Amino acid sequence: MSIATRRVLVGAHYGLRDWLIQRITALILFAFALGLALAVLITGPWQYARWKALFVPVPMKLLTLLAVLALCYHAWIGVRDIWMDYVGNAALRLCLHVATVLWLLYCFAWTAQILWGIA
Image (cartoon, rainbow, N blue to C red; front, side, top):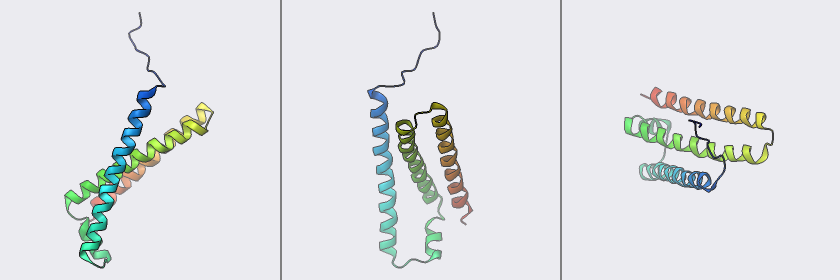
């Protein structure tokens, strides 16, 4: 008797979960973009000092990180599906998956570094 269970690699539930996550992350990105657009419209002409002041408060930094995390997850699902659909070689597909994850982690870390560098 085997202790480990086998993971089913295909099935309707994986597609439904990814579809739902894509919609949720899109809503988070839409809400963030709408908030930024309203901030620009309400406060008038923008210069660098106003953009900087907008991202100084910690809650705005956290909301921005949430939006970037949603963007990274949204991008991961989309790019992963492209690799799975169009790259037949499993070894190459794995390398592309790893490269995509590393790039998205780098982008998220760079965003955090930029945000926490704003004083």
